[in-house]
Structure formats: C-alpha cells, structure tokens
Image (cartoon, rainbow, N blue to C red; front, side, top):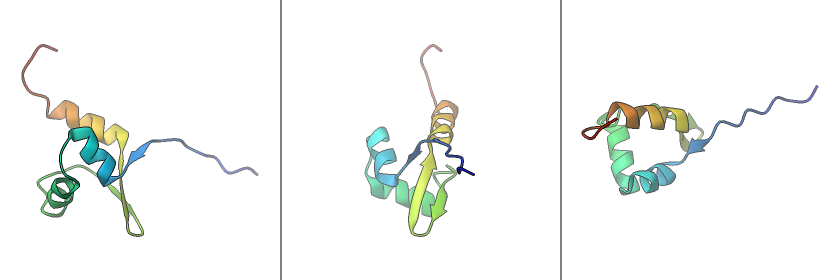
Length: 67
C-alpha cells in the first residue's frame, strides 16, 4: 500500500517572519510569551506553522480599509 501524501504547506519561523516583514526573534518571543496566539506544530526541535492558520490569523487581525 502506498502511503498517502498530504501537501499542506507549512512555514518555518523564518518564513513567517519574512512574510510579515518582522524579525524571527519577534515570532519566537510572541510564541513563548503567548502574545502571538498562533497555533504551531513542534516536531522534534522544528517549529512549523500551517499556512491555513496563518491566513486565518491575518484575517482575524485585519484592520481598516474596505473589504
């Protein structure tokens, strides 16, 4: 039986920081002190963020402008 591969994009801390144009340390600090309530996945020593969660977080924190 062939294993099923699910291609759900995940971002590293550095990729998320680049997306938001902030320092990776800002993401790490927010994650550790709970000021960035964004779900993440920890596998071994690696932290990953599901792109779906990132997009949802961005939508929830959108301010101003027309929709």
